Image (cartoon, rainbow, N blue to C red; front, side):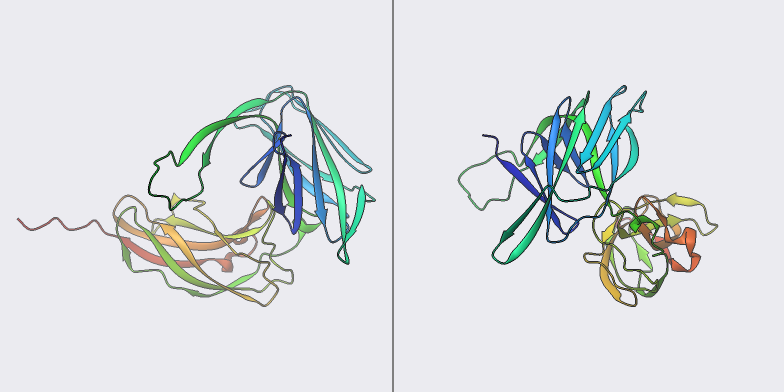
Length: 290
């Protein structure tokens, strides 16, 4: 028996056979040329789910079904990194309702059927160990035939929420850093919109950074993310330390910090005042005296 794998997503548990699906970051990879069952289990009924579905194989046919909802996606030629389509499923009644220990759990079966796929190689990391007697590889390469890569984005309507208002209360960047250095910036940012910032799913709010020249030319755009951790209610303040990577070349730069509603838009596109800017000099270390 292959056993089952459970993954927390959006306040629910997603469960499926270990040999049939593989979580990779935000994506759930489903096995190629097969019908894969994924069970969505939670304490509340589901009205709708929005998914981004990515196919790596040209000519692939992807069929999704959940309760009363059905969607069929026909993919023609696709680029090397695949093609993504967005679908909304409204399942209706749950597949099963179970009660345990005074709690009620709503179970919805999502089936993903694909006609083709592409093999993807990925790296598995071993869990840390304190055993000093054995040496082993801490990571190794595995492969998985991917029929579709499915990302949960949220519920229908959640991607249209106006979350694009923020006020930076703290963003104290250092005056100078070394080329290529990684450093932290303590930040405090308030959600001044009327909607809570979502913290899970593909479409969630995260903090990001950019580097520009003093004249506004982009040097690094779309820097690495800092998670907000939990949904941020309107009026609440988030306090975090953002990890920033400095540009590799010495010079004077402008560091920009801003939130992003992933897969929806940058806050600055809707509200230019949501960006915190600081001038930072990237200074090469001095040569040792001879």
